[in-house]
Image (cartoon, rainbow, N blue to C red):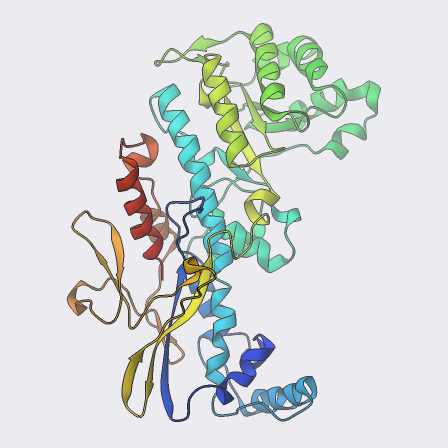
Length: 451
């Protein structure tokens, strides 16, 4: 049920309020679609659709328009435009602004899944399995977003792909709107303030206190407050070595570097830890730190740096099992609507009972051309999703589902169902040897399939 203090008539770009005066006379239907528009320079081959159910439940379900809200909107827009422009009968046309905002959770879920592809590829290649993959990327983004709702939406979108997060708002959103009591997990972890508050000369005591306070279960300790290499070699690898080695496999000490060149720092840290604690070889012949010791890198993380780090570790003979990653603003904030080219476009209208396909085709940028007519979604003979335009699709093949109509939610999805739909394919883990033309064809089908 939508919040009663929310006025949907005021949740709009201003200019939408004037559009009812701009359509042709006697127009009775405007048909629009949402998509992540395919572009040749696009970074992603596919997208993850997520977040619409929250918007529907939060803002649109149930009785959302009352006489009081209509009058509030009428007065507001009269003052805002300095003329009477609000159409009491045609207010429904302003919904586009809110619906387009689904671009944000879609983009976060897509980027999160791209992280998962990279991690899966390296984990499989260096360990032979995907064990622990769902905990390899931790959401550090709560403090880096612009609002509580952004944290909730973005944090929830990350949980489509992973189970590791510090963004409590995302867990709460999934619990309330997607039927999952506990979707994400964390461990006790230090920040710089809890280390430096002991003073520079008492860094060892700060570290030892953490081992005392959390004797069982994993604990993460940021170790670069002064000198990450000294901390790993002298404190962890010498003065507290026995304390570290006493910890069991399920009480891992996770050391966190948090500054410097990502790849080079991590390579130096893991070499120091090898010298101090030794290592073993896994079934694939790659080196593995003792089970009581791991590393998490949370600074400077993006898709490129994760891939670079894991490649360099692999080149030095290290398994991806040794490291975890955390990502903050790059995961939840460093994006916009153009990251996936998300658009909401009109493609069909009816006037005086007659239908007409409509579209835009700017001569200055053909990539901004829109689709024509009523649309449907189907799988082609190669198994890829594709959009059928101009009402030419067969109803029995249409995969689009009506989830909301006239104030009622008709279809709900649990996080479990969404996670299943977003699972990685085998070719995501072991890249297929497609030729370039075939790959481009796949990209076109997949990108066009999201509506």
